[in-house]
Image (cartoon, one colour):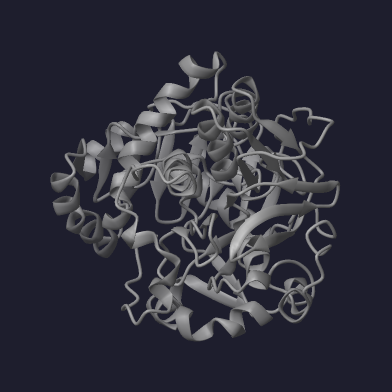
Length: 439
């Protein structure tokens, strides 16, 4: 089931030519269109479905520095500043709040892992504090768990997956961008090794620069022009409750995570309960993903499902260059797993036995596009003017504004906002050691 999200109108007329075409209307692509237009570039954003329809509306909504991989920290710091700025710049509420994040655990190993991140926090001056069991319990109202400790990440916050992307899209249009939904980008046209145009199902747009922010579809989109981007999808399940008693703004614990939404409902999920589906694309890039698979073997289940035959990981996507494949799947919408839904509800009720039950509004499945090292790709390619910004590995919502800013810098040959070396796409092919990042 598709999660509820604000919908906005499309621009009717496709432009003949723009400075930059952005492919993909998730948080990264929409923010890229926003920053391009804000800087005075003409930009068209094309999306095969509707803004935020895939992972960007299925996320927890966390915007955090806490427990980030060190390579992502400059983007995390930048992104929080950019999240803060949206409301004033756009004149509308994007739903971001600096609520702080509370982590609590009854697992000694998990607590030690959080403590081990302290040097990164100190290096980047992150306002975060280790908690005793009593301190953790004090920050989590009415719970019946016996916590041994936790973390309070004071300056972090959460966005609104049902609101943020479309409102930012409206902001991009305010600065002059055009937005084209139900308009799949089919292929790139090249001249002398450079981007010359984007061919969409509704026509051709001449351009000299493209930001490919296609999420799970990015690898398939750039493959026909010779760009090798190892990517795989991990399937997860989440649910949204109906408005309920306030149990805190944002909580992470070993067997569930809860994020309070603006209307008083909660998003509930479980970390480390992902399913890695055996697919042709996964097999193709198995060598690159092997270090991550070995490291996270206990946290990932293997399965074979319909994604073997349909979607960005499918056999058709691997063996065919059919340019209409993207419009054949407007919204990648895997079914949620009922077993996980039941487990989430049971875990929440055991922690809060006095709430009288969890009333589920709806649940959904999601495909999280991942890289072999769980760090995003934000990179120029061997095709002049083509920048890839994808593979966020579940971190894309919170990091989206920063990822987009770096992608825009690269696409327009501006000075990069952060060092892009760690995010280059050819790190998987140049002999560099694959160092698997944080979840």
